Amino acid sequence: MAFKQIDEIDLNDIEESPVWMFLSEDDPLASDELTVKAISPESIDHSSSIYIAKTKFILANGEVFTGYCTPDCSGKLEDCQPVVFCKNTSIGFWYGIKPVENLKESYDIFGVQKEHVFPIAWECEFGYITKKSAPGFPTYGQTVFLGVQPIEGEISGFGFIESGEVRYVA
Image (tube, rainbow, N blue to C red; front, side):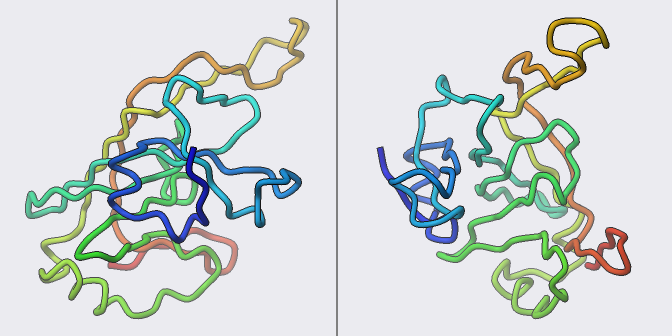
């Protein structure tokens, strides 16, 4: 299996291996907490690992791109942190606490005006569903993995945190 840093993943990597698992920084094979390993979709372990998976993105103008996200049943931008591959580069939509900068550069990479980009629909076939167990049962309220299912969502803009709240800008 291949090992890479998350920011080294490109379109060829995600096409060849649609699922990549983050390694623990304690793993002897990991350089740090940003090390990922290609895994088969059948070996996804939601109880102890975080992973990224191949995702299809459809711009407002209908153009389709491939990228990845961290599948999460919430579908929230801050949980999924989607990345799109376009013209040999990657465009992320979640900035976290960093200021959102260079939006013109991102639109230029897509080659369209911003009104043709958002909203972006996305679909990931390697999503997952979880369920909280009822109190008093053997798992005592822990999250229990129920299975893999496709998930989808929509990106309304570039996301970031400002004054403790999630905000979006297009």
